[in-house]
Length: 172
Image (cartoon, rainbow, N blue to C red):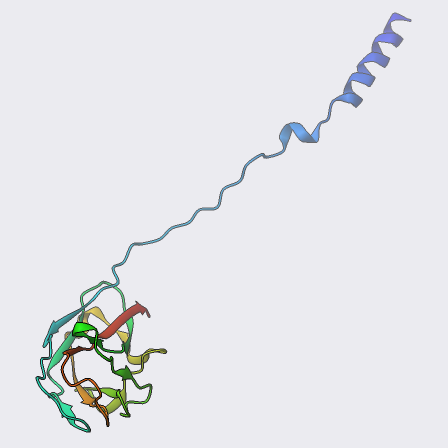
């Protein structure tokens, strides 16, 4: 009888022990590997462009070798370009940058031309234009020029206007 009771107790003990949970994993890993790269561009020459006094409805151009941009990073880059409204000194009337490179009343146009791809392309202010895609670090300096079309009517003739052109890089 003792054996029977002992066998029943042992059978109950085995039934009550949760077998699967003793071997379940409580953690799992995902391994991530990455190599660091450097995304960087530099304007190598030509800035600032000091034009001097301008009149309305004037088109002024640099040589297409006036400015240079270099991919001094370690990864290929897609370069975009955009401009801004002017910043007048002394709180005067600003010139608005047109989206299509043309001029109007207190609106100026701005265009660029790459030496490697001649022809004027508008520099917009809201949606950047493609300057160069897949620019490799080994490519050397890419040269470009600028063209400005002064407003057809200039209401502020006393304050210096400063315009900024921004080139931005993203990993290609």
